[in-house]
Picture 1 (cartoon, rainbow, N blue to C red):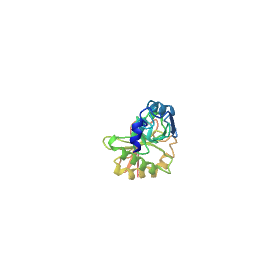
Picture 2 (cartoon, one colour; picture 1 turned 90 degrees about the vertical axis):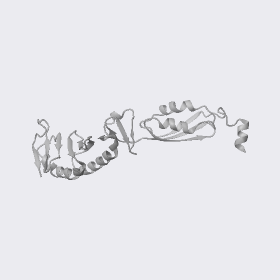
Picture 3 (cartoon, rainbow, N blue to C red; picture 1 turned 120 degrees about the vertical axis):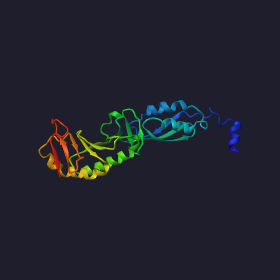
Picture 4 (cartoon, rainbow, N blue to C red; picture 1 turned 180 degrees about the horizontal axis):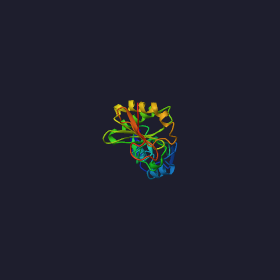
Length: 227
């Protein structure tokens, strides 16, 4: 009976007990408190019972860096928001980001997050590219080479990019493990006389690979190493 009585007495009208206070709980790295208040403020001022929590959640969740939002009302005049930011895992095709939950999203300042891994490939094969990056990082663990990113071409050829910008072309994925092991097994001896490192390596040879050194001309400059 209480809701009926409330309606008759006007308790639930849009201007009854207006919500005027906003509290936000979040760890701000990319989303600002000002941005959240600007999004929510137009919805404040309505009565406590008339305030649409779902609409407020949806508006805040639409902000680029927001992963999810929890909203609740506190009697008599407060809207409380708990906001979880997206945690970027890698850059995707130079213009978007991949969250740790595996979602691709657009965000201001994505191009400036150069410390993140760079992943490239067709959108439909995102999960495969992420998986290959994990495999490549594991393969290079314990070496002096650090992986910056990986790339998959439209034709299905895989490449690894090192932190110093060197490109290692691997080719088919089903050959990747064997080809990387062959390259990394001789890498210490290969670098013994080349302190500046290499700029390009092609592992798509049956019994070896080709390496290009800094300042060398031609794709196969420096010769090939055979195992």
